[in-house]
Length: 462
Image (cartoon, rainbow, N blue to C red; front, side):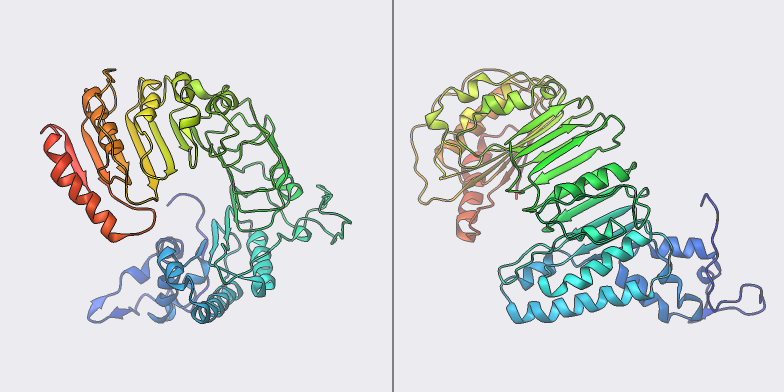
């Protein structure tokens, strides 16, 4: 390992070479490694696994307390099990809070590379959450993620405490908080990644972090009702990844960040992009019929010619009322991957989505997530495939396949026009989690579509 080694004081006595530690009948050479190497090994384990090593011997008792990464993510599987289980959730929440409190009280590292909280916490945990934030900021954390997403039986309304950012607590007469940038409690200059999910964080707090975190490269804010007008602007910003998602009070978002490479937004209201020469990855919702596809691309006009990855959520768009809307797409000459999320009744004409393929001559991968919800699916006569050859598309993934007429039309277009196609992935995943419907889609793919696929094309049916 490079850099300066820091010795951690434990009960282990390295100078007493005559004494050896044994695990079973095997010489324990791992325990004889330097402290910084052992801590590095422990930091690669799950937090609870690292904590269990304290029982191995006195040599290991305190080592785990110096790991620079504290990840309290319980995982999506655990959260799914708690969904709708009110009493079980209460018990697990108390255990989670107790666990985090115990670790933060005993932890000894002076700095942190990562601090991550992920659990469905309600208002009863507010004081604990604030203490955790104080703990992380006091240790010059580099990556901070606070994810306290709601469940049906929680009423989280955790507001980021602005008093953490200033020397004296302010009681502003309105939601606007005036932050004195010169009176910080801690040094935020080490912060590189900041993520708030289901946290009520204000415009002023975001501005504070942008102003005082010169190394900030990733900023994520999901489900905050306190954000209304944001300006992510500055020639010196190091920001590379920005997500402002499901912040329903957002009225305007101005972005001018020369290092920005990835952007995800779910609102087009007041979106203004300027000076984003490195922006190549964009994910955006366009599910409001009052906003045309033409307007969407006009908002992206400063970067559309340089995009390499584009994800569009076209949920609930009524293309029948805008027949020519998809035939006026701008050219995207560098686009390599396209993801389209389309939620509809199920019998809509999908062949129109091929316009995106024609507008992207270098497209390599196309993923369609068709989230339909109405049964039975209506069928009609399959129309002949339009011949417009595409010379770069290699992978097509169809999520939500059922085997209806619209599905067949689009797949016939892909087979008939994409001359270098190598792989088709069929995923019959149904939005309403109906196993019978999914099995029908899987059966249709095997019996009706598979025989049409040439041998040189790999067909994967999930």
